[in-house]
Image 1: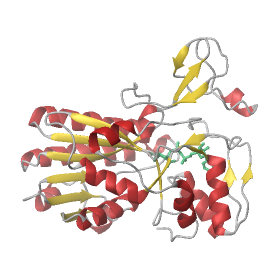
Image 2: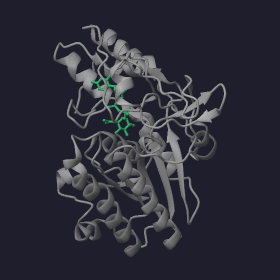
Image 3: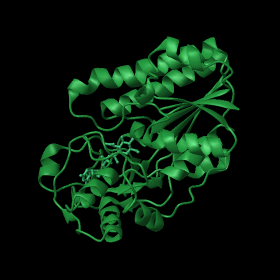
Image 4: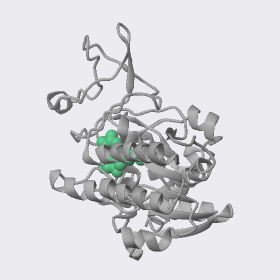
Length: 328
Ligand code: UD1
C-alpha cells in the first residue's frame, strides 16, 4: 500500500517509515524539515494521490516553555491535523493512524483504601515544595496507590501539548464518522531509543538524561525519583503503527495505549542509563515541575487483544542500547 508518513524525518516518524518500508509499504515521506507542512493544503494535495493510508506522526511535542507556546501547539497540532483530514477526505483516503499520547489522561489512576478507584487533581505546590509528591485521595486525603489506567478513562489534559493531542483524537473521530474512514489513535507512553532528539525544553526525560551523560553530567532526577512511567522502545512503537494499519473499525476512532507493560521509576531509568554509559551516577534533587503528573501506568492489554501488538524490547536491554546509542 502507498502510505503517507507525516513527520517522517523525526525521531518516531523515521522509525515508523523504516518499519513500514520493511513490511512492504510504499512510504511517501512528508516532513517540515524537508518542506512538507501539514498545514499546507496544496503541499498535501501534491502527495496524497494514490495514497491508501496516512500515518500522522508530525506534531509539536513536549511540555513547551510557557503559555507563549500555545499558538504554536494549536497551529501545528490542531490546524495541521484538521487540514490533513480535510485533504484526506478530498482524496478519498480512508485510513488514519494518529500518534497520540498518554498525556491525554493527565494524572494516572489510583486506589484509595476507603474510596476505591480515584483520579486525583493536580498536586498543590505547597505539597510539592514540602516533598509530599504522592497524590492523595480527592475525597478523604488519605494516601493512594497507583493502578493501571485504561483507554476508556476520562481525559484530563494538563498542558497545551496534551490538549492538542486530545483535540487531534476528536478531529480524527469527526473525520471517521463523516467519511466512514477508519481511525486508530496510538497513545504512546514514554518513547525512547536511538535517534531520540537531544535535550531541549521539549524533550522527554530519557533524552535529557542521555544528553547529560554524554556531556559528562549526572542525570538530575526530580522529586524523589519514585515516579512511575512506562518506557517503550521506539522500534516497538514503529511496529505498533504497522499493526494499527490493520486495525480499527470504519466510521470510528479506536484508541490504544502503546506501552511496554513494565512500568519503571524515573530513578530506575536514570540508574540504568548511567550504568550502561559508565557514569556519572544520577542525583535525586527533590526539584519538581508543576505540570508533571506523579505516576502514569496504563495497561497494554487492549492493543494486544485488538491489534495483536505486544512490545518486545525489554527495559534492561533497551536502556543498555540507548545509553550509548546516537542521539538525533
Ligand atoms: C513525556 C513527554 C510527553 C509524551 C509522554 C509520552 C515531554 C516533556 N513529555 O511525558 O510529551 O507525550 O512522555 O511519550 O516530552 N524528570 C526528571 N528530570 C528531568 C526531566 C524530567 O526527573 O531532567 C522527571 C519529571 O519530573 C517526570 C518524569 O521525569 O516525573 C517524566 O518527565 P517527562 O519525560 O518530561 O514527561 P512525561 O510526563 O513522562
